[in-house]
Image (tube, rainbow, N blue to C red; front, side, top):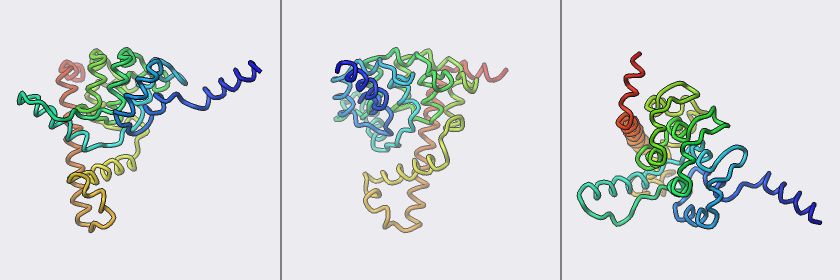
Length: 236
């Protein structure tokens, strides 16, 4: 009986991911859910499954664009600069909890992704700096000075290429633009998207492209600001 129970446990572990791993592989996980899962199972943050830590899974997953999250972060930073207290901190999802419980994960290469560090993988997928990638950088700042082992490019080039060295497709880009467009004007467009005229949709999509382009430029700038010597390396 004990042998059959052991076999069942192994089969369960083989086919079912721990909750923290599962949440890390989702396009988006609300921070309140992440906090509960990590609080109940903190050892999951250090546990490898299929050679991957939860942070590796997060870095490999295309994150759903969250304009509301970005706007919250912007208001929070503006209030900080003005010496005021923001009423609500931005929601960074599960990432901040992964790096808080096990920050060393940011310094561990991903054996399933060409030995890339989580920062490399996140930048290559086009994850924005202000609400995502900066948290990984804070956990392991030296990563920004290391060359990506897959492309032999510095980090700012990965941010500039956005998805060119990953399995990200044009459909992923189009979905991100449309999802961002639907979040304009405090979710109003999301509710009536199917009823908008072609002109209104085109205008919303163009605004979304501009917002995403600005996020990408911010990421490139911030990465260069953290490691300006990367420009000297690329000149030779």
